[in-house]
Length: 380
Image (cartoon, rainbow, N blue to C red; front, side, top):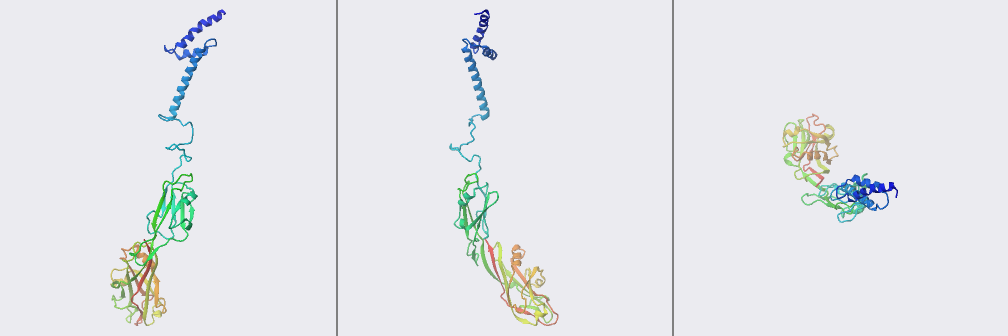
């Protein structure tokens, strides 16, 4: 061995020994690093093992710290998998998808007074799979083959429109019959566009309106002739007298027995007729008579001048019109819109187009008592 070789051995051996024993005396990491980098072959395998162990421990500690920081306390890394598991350990192919629910229906569950042309509308919280919703629709009253089905553009609202209108219960005594009931269900087998089943089945029950036909006789305490002289003649004459006194005629119907909460008037017909004629009123008094919608509390002279409401309605249009039926739906609707204001009464006042020809002669007709009002309405 050369002198230079002996010098190297004398210098390096103590350093290797220091690395091997450094853990007991707190030797610095810097010395260990110097030893590792300075070792060169021969019998220094122990030095390499120590360096490898130190590096492995350092790497392991660093990896563990990094994992703990990313997952949080008490959590385990999933290893980067995007598939989630449910509480029972099963995986779902619809990770993050919302569970659909029915948020609104028309009619609402428990609705009363539904019109016959109503569509059954269901609005969901999510876009839905159309085929699954159609399969989930159930109804004995409005079966799926009796409706047309349409969806909105966002696929979260479906309408089931009956091909034939729904039915109304009908009768003439509103206290003697009830409405017809209908029901439909959207089963929980309906799924969203992402394949998630409906949160829960939904059943909607509702009832349609009733068609009620009622007839009303005149309220005789508020029906009678009115004179321009302030008199209330006890007859049914309508025209002018031999003193050119004008006679009008007021008719009242008490509507307190009309079915409440009328949703629609289908028909309202006032029936009247006349029999006796005096003079030639058709030529002298304008050729016909009209009715005005009025309102008054009692049959007094003030009823003669009661303000007319709305447009006049033709009553008798000529000598051939001896018995007529006239549509009074408009004034009846006005009364129903303000029952308290009209005292729950429909009141009409008949008059000639020209009320007197000033010839000091009777011109007019005698009305036949027993005028009636026939109504057909839709109500809950």
